[in-house]
Length: 417
RNA sequence: GUGGCUAUAGUUCAGUUGGUAGAGCACAGGAUUGUGGUUCCUGUUGUCGUCGGUUCGAGCCCGACUAGCCACCCCA
Image (cartoon, rainbow, N blue to C red; front, side, top):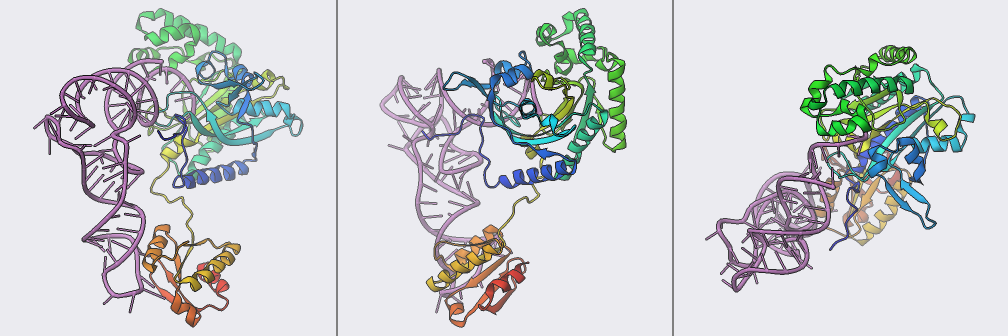
């Protein structure tokens, strides 16, 4: 029996890694232009980091965490998400004391023990960004606008930005009561699942997919009608600023988030191309989280996007790969020895080039060059070594020119640029 | 955790009523001694997911297990 990777843990193979690099690069560029800096955080944390922040009763904490005791019986957990870790670091390192507003982004693997399926894996990757120290709606609009800008830069269209407001603790409490009252009045029509949710997490009814529940939603009370004046004003300003930034959005008062720490603004970027996994990015405001980590009261907002899902949406026809520019086809020991040194000089000049390790036939070496999609092939055979010349072939036009081996490094640099 | 589908060469898949395996792609070599991506020829590759059962005989039938995919739940 061959040893295989752990279920839901995937290799990112050489043919796919250019896409990942492309996405990372665009993310870095875009986020930097909005004033964000990268923070690199650990993959393993003490379990309480997540248990406390995400919510004890959420599925993530209840049944999806990779938790294990270390050799000293301390409970550790492979991070299921990034925000809680960033907040822990923010408080621990007193980042709040450095600047009034701090903008951070991160990139890396997350772990959740779920049954894998399309667009969902046990190890998956997120790119996330957080703004600390800004309660103003301008921050909400800016970060949502940034993520949409990022998707545009990556080349994705047809995505929808859905926004909602969950209000503050007080308005949510009021709304929950209203919703429970409404649902209790229609007890016989709600699905089994929602009957269970009624006690545990009634808001979940709003994203139930059962037909009977869907009908009930039409007349269900909207959270947007229940939020207090201050929360309503905040939401209104967010919308105005989004308009000002020309960022289209849709209001979705049935959007609920899976993590407990959100308040006021929440948002999702959705696609209709991924079946059940329609959320490509999601986030929201979490004004209370820093305090939960014993830090100073610091309003914050952030999001995370799923890289695997993004890659599933990426244009497969586009070429993300960087090819080696030059292939050296060398025939015979003398030419090969010469080429081996030449290739070293060219690489030092930052020209990407390759040659074969064995003295294959010219046909075979040309085939290899074609496979590599090299732009040019430098042919040096026994004849060329004798005459002190080399042939360079442009692989797309098939034009070949010959030149002497004197000062060949500079000639190639000129030719290939 | 629940359900459906699948498991044969590196890969994609054929495999007829059960008689111990085949194709395309890929890879390697060649088609007037040294010129690629198209064409043609030749060649290499398999504990037919694992274990057990039925049978004279199992890739094919039955059972269990494992893995993968898809959906539910939930989520990025």
